Image (tube, rainbow, N blue to C red; front, side, top):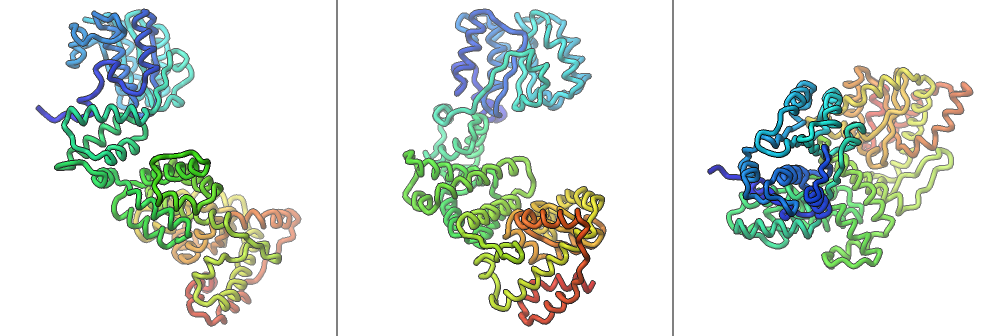
Length: 544
């Protein structure tokens, strides 16, 4: 006999074996015992929490010939035919692949046929949110007034996508994520019956990465069982899932606390090369920060060790909240996105920048209304004294270019640029422009003329990265826009600080074009070779 996956083998055959949904089970049993059946039910909730299993058990129980307790007997002819997948009166439909009007019309035509061997004909429509609008409209009348022997059970993970007219015609049951205790109880039962050897911490790792979904947990256990020759260890599970160890989490937060940008980037590159799952990694980071916040609130947690406490003590509550806000939002980006390693890297760098801002006192330059370079930037430059002079000239050049772009800016031009900006996604694949494209997608074009574009970036570190690859970034923008521009990169904060002044000047028609030549000549005269290499592109734009 062919191998049967564990989650199919151990799909519950009675309500008693349905873990984690006690309230729903009790209600469905009472409905059957008291003969208060509705014509349509809606089962909603996260994946792997028992919606389809409950629908099947409910369909079997209402047709059971010996039902007195609200549960199926599994002995009568009706139950046996169901268990053998031979009951023609319980019809499962996958709406993901049968979502058109024609399929629903065919269903309506068959609804009128009486059950062949059961009391009720039950239609279980899985992933019902995938039906088209036309299909929903075709189903409405039948759903509202089906024959007395027909019951509909609709199952979905996304009830918000269902028309209100459909939801209002159903009794709704909301399934919840299954608790860790219930999940452990179920998995231990399977482990015992299958004679699986697994360490306690490996089982805990599976449960924590299942996100409350029983099917996911059983699937992970099945995969680990197939992978390991002997006992399933924590390392085996982490390797299979593509997640990281607790020591790696500690190393990550140690480097984050010390603002070790280079070390963090190398760590992310290592995980990427190892094929790690950045969604699961982010979940681990979220859990660590959650534990840290609870610890700061004097809520005792037994599973925090001494090394973790030492790291948490180095963070303030405000910093932990800041990290939590940003990396929990990151989960949404990673769930359905591509290039997750790049997305993760950029978001973590943004978190480090925000931590810097919250820790350091930022001073503004009175003349330029701009932040002075941070200590981190100065450390990255080989000659601080000479670079300080160069910075002033380059910042002045930026101001002139901002002035000239805004003087000649037009709504049509910025609309044209914004419409093409999403095309940067095409360059996330491939090594040449991958890094630049990822950073630019984090940015936003805010003003444009025929000759130049102003692009804002959410973090100072991203600004430094894109300016170090200025030629490559302008080359990429030329590819998507089919025209070469002088691009000025600034932070969002700086743009918000200067924008009111320029809005007023534009409104009063007081902006005048300024010449860049004198500033470009000054840059050429500065003798710091390393600095010339860093900012040579600003001169090249003019010369080309």
